[in-house]
Image (tube, helix red, strand yellow):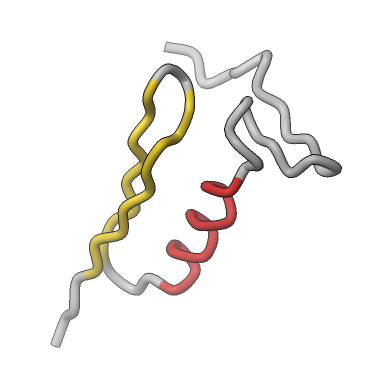
Length: 61
């Protein structure tokens, strides 16, 4: 399995990423990952587009 995505490019002007709508999921993922101490960030993809971003946070004592 190759990790290269030749037709997946980020357009700084439009904010789109890999053909997704306005690249909004990229901002969400960055925010969730930055603020997360323990947990998961999960992306749901449908027809090559990210349609859902879910954050599961774990609290450790």
